[in-house]
Structures are given as structure tokens and as C-alpha cells.
Image (cartoon, rainbow, N blue to C red):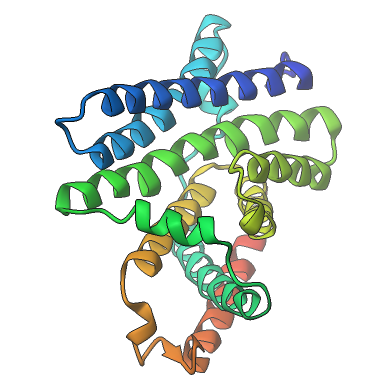
Length: 263
């Protein structure tokens, strides 16, 4: 695949895609706020779905208008069952360890009020709300962000800079910044690095998409369930040692198999 796109143009497309997502979501939310008869939370969740969906609109329009090979440009490549299983192992291992690190951070740096308020605002009121939020957070958001960042932007940077590490670090930084959450910035940045490694090592956007989706799903589970009362998972306010041991094993097994993939 020829390098027909410059890094400046690639960043421009990403920025245009992010603005498209913001304005599409904001428009739906504005309609919801103007209609007092309908549940506002439902419009909030729908605005997430519409906004994240429109994230790919400028990118796809550009690739189609330029007659670019979409499949290759977005790193869409199927993976085998062994790689799929290894990715799932790695995903759950990282999520469990991240949860424990988050609990340790909370001990020394309690979450700000806006984080606690956000969980309350996004708490679905009915089954429809849970379904809409799941579609937005666990399906649409990972799909749009992985195709845009790991599938498109990082791949362009890798080919132009010929420095995979730099491409992953810069893409992950941009990825963390657009979430606009200073409290979780480091965690999101580290997650972005892992996602970038998976995309590069496997030459596919599927593994990072799987990790991203599982991570967001488990974040919903941790936020909206009484996980603290689960004596199997929680031990004295922290992740139970047996889950930590499983997580370390899962990370080792998953990373070992993925790292052995020949490019």
C-alpha cells in the first residue's frame, strides 16, 4: 500500500471526524432537551450512539472519494481462533490489574466529585437505557475509535515515521486527550499503548477492538453493580489475590502468544 496520505492530512481527517461526532451528538441532545415530554436520559444515550456513529463519516467519505482501499487503510483483517482466545485472555488480565491499580490510586487520590456525579447521571433507569448505553459504550465507541485511531491514524504514522514506538505513543496520547478526563488520563493513555501494540503486532484492528469493547463493558459492570459486596472478587477493599494471580497468568499467556505472531 503506497503512502498517498501525509501525516498532516491524516491528523486533519481525525480532527474532522471528532468534530463530526461532537456536533452530531450535540444536535441529538439539543433536540432531546427541547422536548420536555420525553425522558432526557434516553436522548443522552441516543446522542452517544449517533455521535460515535458519525465519527467515521468524514473518514469513510474521504477514503471513498479518494478510492482508497478501505479494508487495508483501516487494518480490517480477520484473525484466527488462537489469536482471538489470546486476546480475550490478555483483555481480562489487563482489566483486572487495572481495576486493582485504580483502587490503589483511589486510596491516595480520591476521585473528584465530577467522576462520582457522572456515574449517577449515566445510571440507566430501565432496561432500554441499559441496552442503549451498552450499544454506545461497548459496541459503537470501540468500533469508531479503533478504526479511526489504531486502524487509520497509527498505521499512517507507522509508515511515514518508520518508528512504531513513536507512532503508538503519539496515537495513544491523542486518544487519551480526546476523552477529556484528566483523572483517568494516565490509565487511558496506557490502555491506548496496549491497543496500539495489538494493532501493530497482529496487523489487524480486531484484537484492539476486542480489548476495547471488553474493557468498556466491564467498566459498566463495575459502575452499575454492587461489586464491592462480592466477597469472591473483593478482598478487604481490593481485588482478591486469586483474581490477581489469574490476571497475571492471563496477561502472560495472552501476551506470549500474541508476541509470537509473525508479521
